[in-house]
Length: 638
Picture 1 (cartoon, rainbow, N blue to C red):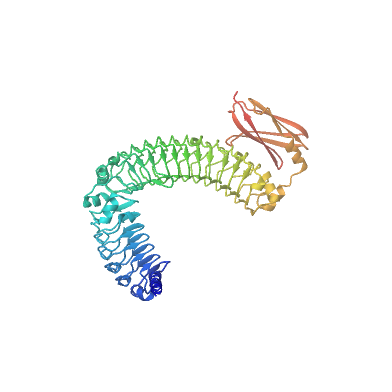
Picture 2: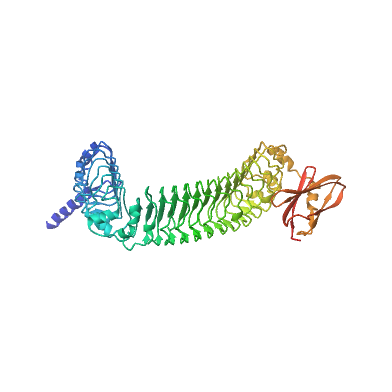
């Protein structure tokens, strides 16, 4: 009989436990009626296994939840402007996720939560305009809290809850206390109210919104030299950072933003490194900051570096020892930035490099030692930039190279060490660019080749060494371009789709790569609105019909000696009497000489005397009727 009684009791206990646990996927309460009917709809439910979301201005009390003792997921109460008390949660003792109280303009404290002893997640108390005190949260075990955020509660002046003080004394995660009323406006104020002194917050965060917070840093955080987590400096009255002079390392995010009176970063002289992978160092919207003096001992940025919208910034002086940015480098929209001086030691950008919309920037002086950009490299909308000469050390881009919309850019010289682009090559919207010299050593492009809307571009000769691309070939809206000569050597099988259109003077499209592609296209073909012989696909295909005589002529072409010092002999064979025009161009694509003769059939030779010409690469074209044959030669010093 005892066995049966024991078994019956065990069944009752198991049955009660099963029915007390409920709602494994969580529940949302939007109305007071849903709160009131909870015990009817979920009889015996005291332990909610999932989340609980409570939001809505209709909710005036939580009495219907008085039987709930635990919540397995997060508890979120937000936008309940008619909820004046949390007493309906008086039996709640644990929350298995985060505890988030946001945007409630009604209750003044947390009375009713005295039974809550455990929160296994973040505590976030944000934008509760009537909240004045944290009374009611005293009994939470600080060791269970993963992080603590109390901010933008405009009336909150008393944060002296035991759980908060215990957590500040021995944090297990990040802390963010700011933008509340005096007394709870930052961690030092809370510590002072609790009668203890803060050491350095091991997980952060540090918010400086006034000059006083900067000045009192060393007294507020004793022996604090390494700042982890998130560091934000933003204040209308901040004029200097001298109070941070003891800091040597900033291990996480650093934002220096919207400080209208800050003229320099002096005070950060002892900082040697900033951030880790995934972090961001952001200098933004500091209207009187003229340079970056104060960062002169920083040798590396562990994550991203963004410098944007600093209206008085003229140089980057102060970053003189920076040799690597291990994330993205973005320099954007600095309206007075005329020089990149200060980046002279920079060799590596591990992510994307964006140099955009810095109108006075006329050169890239300061990037002379940059040799690798492992992500995309984009240079765009720098209206006074004339050339890229100071990129002469650049040997690698791990993404796309995009050069766009710089209205004074007349030369790509400086990119000669680039031989391979992993991503796409995009040249567009540069009206003064007449040729692509500077790209003449590129042999492969991993993505598309996009040459678009360069209204002064006359030739593509500089791409003569390009043998393969890994995407679309797009030549569009280049008004004075007459020929695709320079694209001859691209393997047609490496081209995916082909677009050649709206090039008003383009008449020579029948270069080898285009002809080979049109014979067996790999994708879509768009050829239209160019000049006669390249007006549409049919005209180009017709021009691609090469006669036996033309093939023989090409095979007989020679130039010797090559390299040469003073003169070179160009040899070829004619099949019939012809007028021959030989045009010679320098490495920038400028025409330097023209030789025109009427010649008889047979082997012919023309000697070009290069006296007075500088040493370097030269290109020549031999035109006989509709046929054009190309070659190149190198003049050595005398």
